[in-house]
Length: 434
Image 1 (cartoon, rainbow, N blue to C red):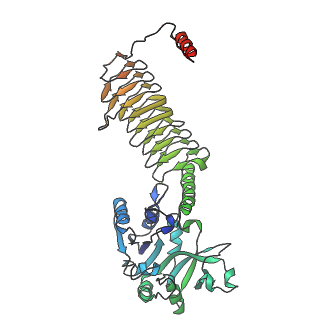
Image 2: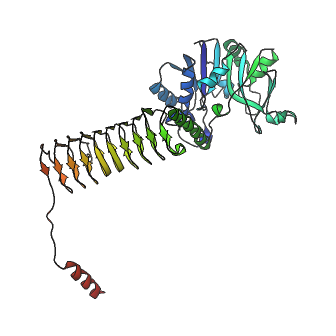
Image 3: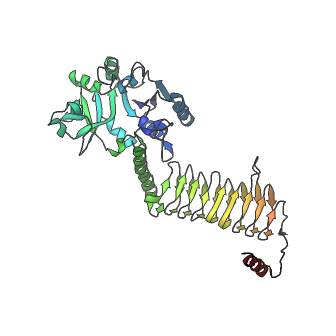
């Protein structure tokens, strides 16, 4: 690949009003900067991320998830601004795509439009029905003549609907010529990348305008922008999975993490949340259920169930208000109102209502092992560590704190005590006392 990519991610993002760096705020379970990196990696093997604010934190996050990303720390004290961000950046290839780290909706297809042709600069532009607040881009025969800041626009220039989308593909030699010469003689005393457009035009170089989709080049500067961007991204994710054969009921109410995957014919009902790298195979996830980093195969879950991380369900029925955590269930029925944590449960086993595995003693977590064809009666507590072998019946209301052998009935109940005529005595005495 004969293209380098520089991603600008040095800004403080003060409008986010957050201790988290702006570019690490997540869209569909992934930091927005990572979405930009993913798109860049599809077209380039030379990617540099420019950092400043929270540079160590952002670099650590990138290094944890990617290989071969280069970093440059902007000298903001001497060279603030987007032009200053490029000072000292070294790239490998003859073309350089300059991308923003707060554009999580950009795609490889959109970026590919910007790297075509042999212009000195390809500049992304969008058309807005109401361009108020934006600098205008004057274009003739497809080439950029100038960028006019709104405050400097004449009345006729204010009618221009074309504005700068903020992404550029520039010949390396052009960058090397102009970046060192950018001045900061403006009200903000910053070095602006857009200044190279005027320099190039003044010297007769070709600055080609590339019309792009506003949605794909949407920047995120606030929590409101973040929410809007995630709505768009979620629509993309769900549209792709529905085209692949997943059925979704009221899809606008469903949330699916960018890492989640589906296989076979799946049904996802309204209000479902699927987080992390969950993998759903030929299963039915019913309304309002939450799936977190879990694998579900040939099973139905919910409504209103929660499957927590590291759980593996196959050929199982999980009903309403059942929570499964870090457990493996194979051919199990747990119809309602149960907590199954740190457990392994085999085929043919039925878990009654109100059953819980008591897996935590305040210091450590312990395993519950349940064999095949076990019937666990309602309102049973299984105090781990405990092993329930095959073909066992556990009576309702039992507390099991020892292993149960194959074929046994386990029952743990306090004998019932009754007091004759207590009801009448209690209420008569209470009434007389009043």
